[in-house]
Image (cartoon, rainbow, N blue to C red; front, top):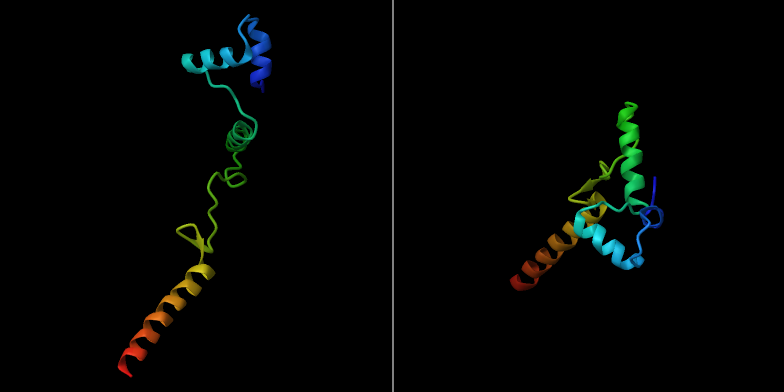
Length: 93
């Protein structure tokens, strides 16, 4: 995979790198960034080989609800219920 520097050198342009990047973006050319395109390439290769479960873009952890761990949700709920219960108990006195 080529990166932006390699694409710039291969273009043979006389523009500065910054100007060249802006021109390419304006044309709609996708300039690969390390990390993002690596992950996408790895996922595509995995899917082509039939190993769809190897790479996940979204963490499908079974111990999470709305992106929060079940433990955090349970502790938070207990604190809220406890605070409401304490308030009711204090008001009845």
